Length: 205
Ligand SMILES: Cc1cc2nc3c(=O)[nH]c(=O)nc-3n(C[C@H](O)[C@H](O)[C@H](O)COP(=O)(O)O)c2cc1C
Image (tube, rainbow, N blue to C red; front, top):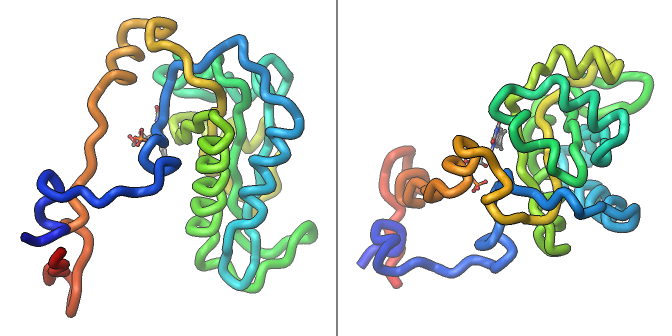
């Protein structure tokens, strides 16, 4: 039996925080994200690793109902507009493209990787606090850059909606259909190799 080839036969367990993480659209409109929780999420991002410790990430934070939240919402795609208003917070994520007067970075080849990793840390911290994070790229990046007066050496990258899970019945029909769609993944054997690219990694139990 090959461990990576038979995911239905032998599924290795992963940590519950990872196992239970997913990207919901149904958020609880009555939930308020308090300042300590928000600071904790940003602290989790802060302590993620980065190339040469360059920390090339930035977050613009809106809380439901405030000006940042509402401004960011105006840039969202139609699909995302249908659900982002229920999030407790909406974050714009930014990655640094090159050094600037605000922050020197040793090199810039890995900033997308580093921001992604900071976002992953933040998402898992949200999960640990009983919340969910839903990252999204479906919005007008140029409009967001202009709205938030982002300098040219930073790139608006994604949004992250954070909130407490609600019942899917709060969603309109088409968004609910997406919410209830089964989640799928490629088997690990599709992307794990040994020896050379494409050569199967054989793991025996
Ligand atoms: C960079 C990025 C962009 C995404 N864009 C959107 C989006 O615009 N709208 C949306 O509903 N979900 C978006 N998602 C969420 C993905 O669709 C979701 O993570 C993926 O389907 C896996 O589902 P899961 O997170 O529930 O495991 C995005 C996720 C990432 C990481």
